[in-house]
Length: 305
Image 1 (cartoon, rainbow, N blue to C red):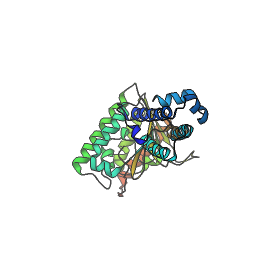
Image 2: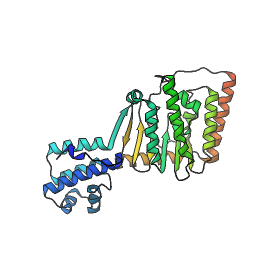
Image 3: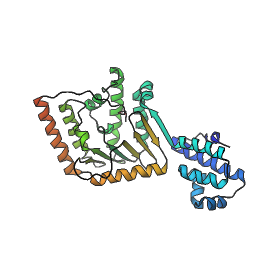
């Protein structure tokens, strides 16, 4: 019994990971001849939690798995193999260069499918405006950054990104965006284009199911904006680095990101205060456009979501 036990035919990645891991752990326990009560006692785990894990109703953390395997008494070789596979099941990484090679518009379709099953989306951005809030011109500028996409590919990718935005008008879903103030000033496009993007931000902030907060650049901050990330309900997190996109379903990882999001949300500006900041920056950009501006070529590898 090892990594091979983690294969399954469930319909979604989350269910597939949860059910496969639970089934494999249950099989290991039964094969060892131990009862559930014995394992829970040795692992200092409640019977209810073990039952939920074994029957695929909750995704265990890697720490939970290690405790259960230790309680069962498997060999170090089996434990190592199982934990390696389990970590791969709950965390996925995809390099941006691979997404470009496969067709970046396909990744937009993948994100759209994930968003379609998300009732409550929380998204933190310290790099660029979120894709769900972008204007066509801003999105085109994002995908024009080096290494720029070919024109036809860029147009197809922008169209796929914009198609995702229809979700914002679904009243049965909730969207909460946090954007650092410096993002509103970060010019990857002419000032007039950025100014119109901020108009779009202000407009969308008035939707009843959309909450947009600006994390101001002044004042005491609760943390560093190390990575942008999105929380999809409480089932998965997608985070971006310069070279790759990571998806994790580990409950402890999700909890860490949720707590981080809440800390930034506490200092963010909302409603009229948020719109005042956005409109002030917008007016500055219009004045800058009128007096002339110089473009700077920047690199933005992690711009796909």
